[in-house]
Image (cartoon, rainbow over all chains, first blue to last red; front, side, top):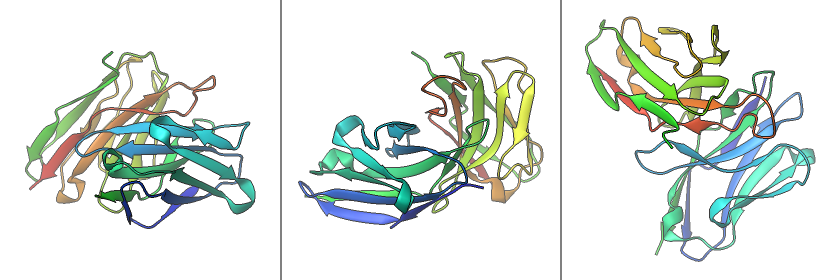
Length: 113
Length: 115
């Protein structure tokens, strides 16, 4: 069985500050890992993903994440927060023959002016 | 590009009523799935399909039926609505092979309220 834990259901940062959203996973097989973003009243859209290869993954809007197998983590970072980054962020792990995703409970990011 | 289209966007039902949430995708994706989103619980998988004629249960399948007669369509049926099924429902699709395996494309969601 696979699972995802997102530490912190709400995170607030000041505009221009570092964004760090934490994600830990459990999986019995090599996982694919994803971060999705959800803006109000919209569906989820992919920020970035890790499948194989380079462990530091860059995504859209200046976000990146690093896969650390020894720590079973896939934390999301952005060096400088922008007001437009305010949204809910979901970490997800994908395993199994059908590669269905299991999502974390989400982290609501607030960016303060 | 239409992507994944869900209808209706909003629906109010009375307890015991049945309804179907429609989902269609135009990307020729083999894999389709339904999730429900509830506050503080993330997205939970209801049912999924790996191709036409093949469906399987996810984490929370009770009270829901699905079918997959074509590659494009994957309707979700609520048999007898209950207040516990008040939620936002998302349909998603992805390829099953290649480097984009598992990358889900989501519809905009259907907000269901059961009174």
